[in-house]
Image (tube, rainbow, N blue to C red):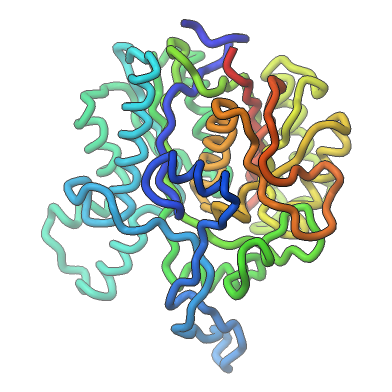
Length: 399
């Protein structure tokens, strides 16, 4: 059937996260409100000055939400390719079970910022730049896309989309552009980020935005007093988007993106472009702010991001619009963050609940707490990517 309101149905979902392999593992982790992050050897960080300006790294434990080992070894040498293929495959199989019949032209979009980080690290430090040609090709960003297209015989366009933490939203809007323009009949979208090497985590700690030394619910408190930042996570998330979906989880009505053109890490304090993204997303979706019931926020637990989104929520939306962020639970999954959080909305509509993290401190009055029954109002999903990427999408429950 055609998607309601002229939107695009998300009719298949797949997920690999710190909770494990599969969308059910993601939902169960969120539902029970147990953070995916665990104390992991090698991720304890000491950012003290050692005289050379680089700080030091200790082998002690730190809190991170890494994707566990798993997947099909034939999908690739590293966790990245295996997770990407597994999430896409689960989404495609799920969509078929829900009544999706793929069209003649299926496109592939891969939301990605950092690719095979662990394999590149090994290439330089362990293999000393010497690999078989086949293994070297596995490092290329085109290879996991090529192998997925081959597996299913898809012949539509295939490309990577990169907008830092906003990459999932950016890919979703790109998929809608393709579908609206008639370039494709359907889109498989995958967002993948498995970049948590100790070196990468240590540098985010130095930037003052990442917490590794305390329980995630204590350190990461979006829209609550005492938040110190975010716990880092990993994920691969797959979607199938189609106007001919059998039973969509949710419908993408529209969205918008902008760029601050202000700073490499900081949000423009005027919030001009953030505000613009929210307003234009509603306009693009053809809906009013009073039709929205939920703001699934970027909400990393950093002061500037949380302050910005809370200000926009108070300015644009009615008082009964609930605010939440799942980053204390699933972690900040970097290039896959927006996609993980879109999956939460999709699964939440199907299962009738918003799995908001528990409130642990004095909070913004809009903040949702624990499992909340979901109604038929719209969800706005915002994502603010490092470097000035602002993105907002509008999602509706299935008709």
